[in-house]
Length: 410
Picture (cartoon, rainbow, N blue to C red):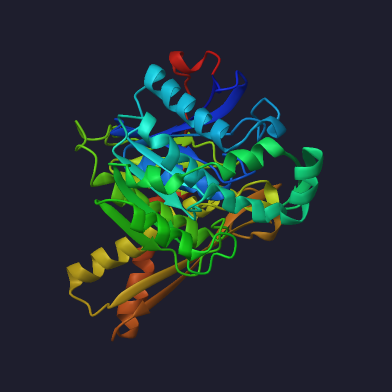
């Protein structure tokens, strides 16, 4: 996946910050994502959904609404209608710079916004809502204690999710005048409604009202035990994967197979998710790499050393299996546990290096099956002959070059 920053002009003339995630190969379609009320484009649910869509050939633009995240402007001067206008401006930018969005996705109030904006994006064939209210006025419960002050004084500073925001009377008047269900009834686009029955911020009855107002084709997916913001990794991943599969039904097939790396090459690229997030492509296969939270990562994938340990472990089990099959020995399953650590060279009696630190890979092998003692001993010996094991023991050269097109500013 390729991730790049972008900016465009919002409906109010402010510069809005965005990020476009694109698949490594050919782009099948574009999607536009709208985040939740007072959130930003960088919440985990948004980044995970964008990554899942990219793996299915769908490029996704997610952006910060006016006055939020890294976007310019004053949040106090915004309302639901201005959010809808920002969405339309984002769709216009995609249309001008790349291709109009085929899928519109909205989380919470962003879901209500994409329902309202859908009629203005003719090219969109599908709309997805996640935890969306059926009436934009629903968000007023987040600052219910301050409504009287806003009505009396014209504005008030409120606290939402531990952060201060200024809400003006124009916001209340705007959400009170919305007729979202009428827009849903006239949608004429495929609709996927995703909602958790345990959502304490926007009740499941909102999903029922949206679903009942919509015409077919429409689908509903329960997010089971998820919370409103999909803060648990497994919930965000599930929603993203279902969404990607659903979207694929309403898009034309890919014009050509996704571009793959050379047969003998592995391509690793930053994906823009956190500080260290990486996408790994090898042929038709994809992996994710990251670092633990303790060192500044987001722990969304294997670390580089875990990948290296995985290479040793998989090569070991494959080598054992190949030999056992050749000998027709009753090996039912082989399991290898690899632990990597650094040790002082002086503590290693078998090492040629006597100074500094060296990398140590401790490999524990389990063999299940009615093997006799001699067979187990032979398979243990064969384990040391796996190609990766041999590579780690040989002198290795790493030759680094710079592609001309990557030398300029990004």
